[in-house]
Amino acid sequence: MRQLGVRVEGAYLSVPRTATVPRSGLTLGVRTERGVTFMADGRERTIRTNAATVKEALDQAGITLHGQDTTSVPPDSFPRDGQTVTVLRITGTREVREERIPYATERVEDAGLFAGTEVVDRVGRPGARRVTYALRTVNGVRQQPRKIAEEVVREPVSQRVLVGTKPLPTSVAGADGLNWSGLAQCESGGRPSATDPSGTYGGLYQFDVSTWQALGGSGRPQDAPASEQTYRAKKLYVQRGASPWPHCGRRLER
Image 1 (cartoon, helix red, strand yellow):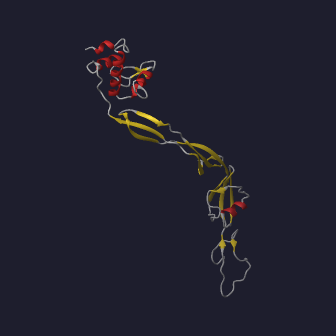
Image 2: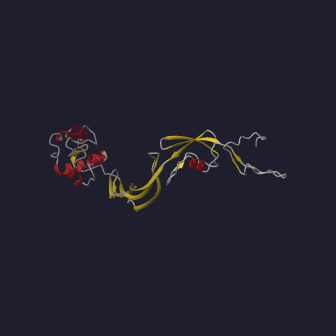
Image 3: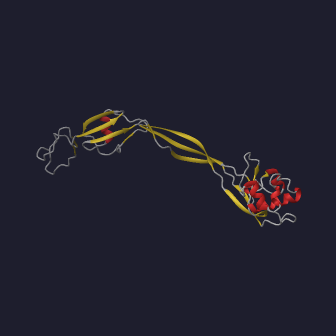
């Protein structure tokens, strides 16, 4: 070894140092001593080692891996001179969470409903899934949960909305010649989506919901198209005259 210029102090030799070299030659494995630093449990430990693996050097340093513990480099890798290896203390648990599955919405055209009218025919219901996550803490720091399994426990029910396609009539005998734009301007400032401060009256002509629905409307008047609001206001006028609009009804007369 001296003739080869190899330092053998602290080195590992695959054959005894006192072995005789035969005339046929000898295959010799040598692992020289290297300095390796381990960072573990908040402390730094540097050793000189001729170990073949990081795990073996770790044992020589008196550091034990437990459970899921590992190192910052593969434990079976060859330790290099001057290398710093961090010991990763790992604890792991599992957590099961129930998560919401949102429902889809189907929109179905309905020729029996006036255009601009939408009716919820079936209310949607969210589903649920049971998801299992792996939770890990590395050196006291909680890692991002990792999904490892999931099971649907309740399928969602889609919401079905009927969308009207029937053309809305605009003419109502006995009410067509009146100043409906003037009434709308007085009642709501001409805004189809207007709502009074109390939330009781809405739309161009400030219907209350019960009156609106009694006239064949669906939902709230302020959500309906302006043309439908005017049509139903005309129907109301034929039934009750200008009395539903005590302050602005006079605007109907041009």
